[in-house]
Structures are given as C-alpha cells and as structure tokens.
Length: 94
Image (cartoon, rainbow, N blue to C red; front, side, top):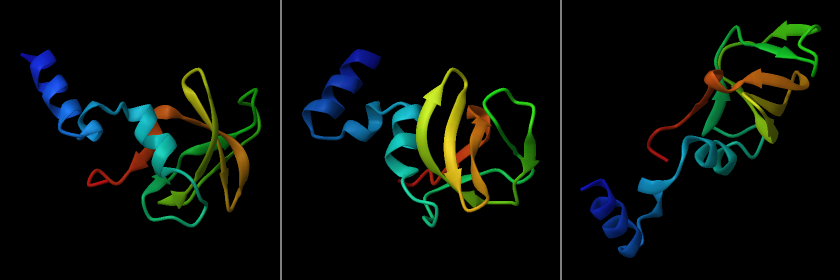
C-alpha cells in the first residue's frame, strides 16, 4: 500500500510526500535570514571536534553547508559550526 501511495504521489507531481527530512533541511536552510529553517534555542554550535561550543539563542536561522554523520555544518549570524541533526527545525508547511 505504501508503494502505491508513493508511486501515485510521484506520478501526480507531488514529490514533497517522498522527500526525506534531510532533503527538506537542505532545501529550506539556505540563508541566515530565512523564516523556513532555524535551530532550537540553547543548541550548542560547536567546532568540528565538539570541544569549543556556544549556545545559540532561540530560533536562530541557519544556512546548511554540509552534513557530517549526525551533525549539520551550518552558518549562522553567530558563526559557523556543527549542530546535532535533531535540533534543526523547519517549517512543516513547506
């Protein structure tokens, strides 16, 4: 049944139903000033080793640079660094 729903959505031109969470984050997290993607407040923005970190304010917009394992490399108005993939938030209506 899931395959039928997926194929029907794809054939009707509704690829958003099949889009993964990572794909949505990559599509929506494109600027440090957007409204569609942000990082949860209190999330640590860390260097690659995870040793030098600073907490981000609530709803910090983020531009995705890459994904490394379970962390996104992002650029924010507070600097560049890595955040846990669990703490990236996107507007569900998009």
